[in-house]
Amino acid sequence: FGSSQVGSRAAFSIRPVHVSPLIRSTMVAAGDEDAEMTDAGEVAEEETKDTVQPLDDKTKLDAADEGYDQAVVQDTKDEAVDEDDAGDEECEEATEDDAGGVLNEEAEASEPAEEQEKECTEEDGDGEDASVSKHDALDGPPHKEEEHRDSVETGVSKQGGDQHSDSEPEVDEELKDAIEGAYRLKRLLSNEVDGGAQSSKKRKLEDNRSSTESTKIQKLLNKWGLATDALTRHVLENISLDMLTLLEENNYQPDTTNMWKTPAELLQTHSNQLRESQTLGGGPLDVVSCFKFHWKLDAADEKLLRSLTHKNLRHVLKTYDGSQLLAQYVAVCMSVEPEDDCICGNAVPSAPGVLALSRYTRLELIDPMADCAVFGDANLSFALNLAKQRKALGHVGRVIATTFENVETLKERYKEIDQTISKLEELFAEVFHSVDCTRIAIDPRLSGMAGALGAVYYNYPHAGAVAGFFDGHPVVNWRHENLMRLFFRALRFFVKPGGIVKVSSNSGAVGVRFSYVVDSALENEFEHVETMPFMQWSLHRYGRSYGDRRDVYKRPGEGEQYNAQRADSDMVYCFVYRPSGKTLPRQQIKLPPTYKTIMACTDGALGERQGEAKKKYASELYKRFMTECSGVHVG
Image 1 (tube, rainbow, N blue to C red):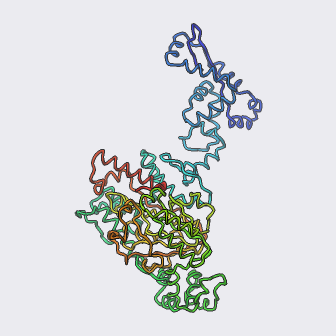
Image 2: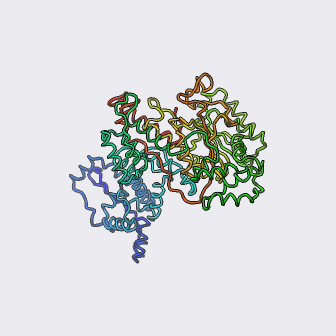
Image 3: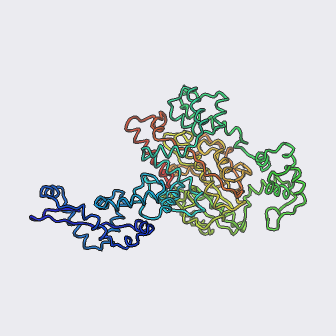
């Protein structure tokens, strides 16, 4: 109720309590049908009859001094509105504000109604989070709230679990897996920016280290005398248990006296090299070498494979499942004829197998009917080469050319971009701008393309340079690895079984390392089938670019070259999508350093700053990471 001093008389206003549908349904379940049909105004009048007492003069004056005049005026206006509608609006406002407002005053005036609401909330909520207001529980059946909470946990709700940034679009059920990792990474960064206990809680949920791993990490830090080095701890926390064991057994110790690199950066490089030493390396590999490594075959099996003809070798590579000895399986395949619809298998069937398959890869003889997509093509010159070749070969599949930058940025950097786009459109190619290859599942321009892509290309992927840090520095390197992991997970929905994916990169790159490309592909059932030198590829002649603001005044090949990279080390890593039909575990992501870890960094751009300047730069750095994870171009 509200009171106001009007002349010498006190005005009182009693507002009826609105009974929610949930309370009414509870009363009906208890058999009290008469109570359900009772008018909300009558219920309020009956419940508050004994509690409302006239105020004395002193109380009236105090109320007037505290500004209750406006409350009475508002209450008088509200009485002219239909009681049920007014109650509904007030209940909604109280739920949205999570403060109760006028509804709390009404609840205080009606203790029985409050007790009923509390009982319904506790009974229907079934142990929900205590932070959820009892008024929130009145919005609808409890299973709706549980569904919304589950969708937030998986990162596919409209809010995306991210209160710091704009809401994320909702995706279909079959697309959840393609975008969940990107949403999860964005939420981690958002929580870190917001700070507080929520950030630590989310971090612990994402960090699934075992007690054995934690023990080894602490043991190594103590051994190296780096127990207080937050960045070195961050590097160790992102290393697998096998690598931690190898570091412990090999007696490795980072050089703490190195004047160029910190122990954390040295450890990051060493752990990557140690992991890559157990692979085939980033250099050229033919189809037999990759197949041998995949199935752990011996030298005799390799010799047998290299002796097969094109027809037989193609069939073995496509259908062998490891359930029997390779020699036995090859004997069976000798009598198998290629499928009628297998255009590639019918061509030159008696040619040497390894040579024929290598020629197919280098000449880019792909499925003529399937669509293909190019991601991250800065100046679209590669997509133009591909479109010209497909037209010359008589292919009918579409060419979809995409850029990460928007068209305005492209026009600033590449004076020839308008002409290039016109040529692509003349070849019936489709050009899309502002496409983030890790978030294609929520790009409406690519909707309806499930399993439509027969070939995908991504040349020299890079997460973007950060001033003051080398690409291999732990503060920024996690972005490059996550780029590949999220890219291949997103492709699973769009690439058809048997479709090819080709990613070009330098075998000595320290940003997107070759192991990031290969390991991310294998995690998502893209089989590594070949690594060919980039210069042997029929599509290698295109206008290379840096893909950032440097392209305004210089380009690779025009008297400029990439630092620490040689052309003969450029490779094309080739994969074939072979889904098993099994549900994959959720995509693992490389955890970014916490804000506290970044503040503890003593080198790079952070080492040059102190105090408030360092805090400001660290905050700006985190906001940039957030922007990148949202699919917005930076730099």
